[in-house]
Image (tube, rainbow, N blue to C red; front, side, top):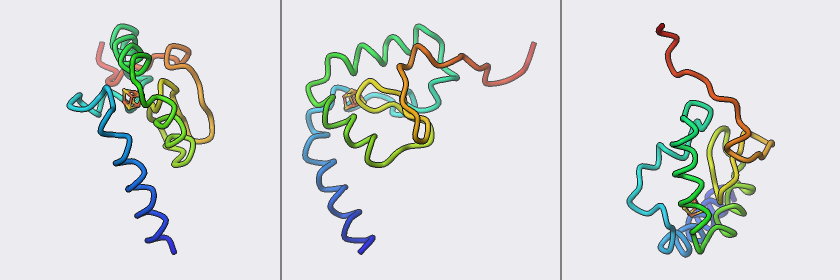
Length: 96
Ligand code: SF4
């Protein structure tokens, strides 16, 4: 049963991902937003705001509940959803 539902999800994902504004972009940019600068976040937000499959992407994020990733212009942190600019910035390395 798990295999069947995964196949369905992957099929649904492929059907709209073809129109994604982020196709060809570095997908790492959409993960761990708290480590990105405000400017980097704004670039990603703009990409999502102008994306025609934003609604489908957000629904996909709500379905998979990622640990730390952005889908449809919303930042998902487990069960929580928030605007990417409202997430506190963290330094990747604690070098002075
Ligand atoms: S809404 Fe954003 S993350 Fe989702 S497909 Fe569009 S550009 Fe990519």
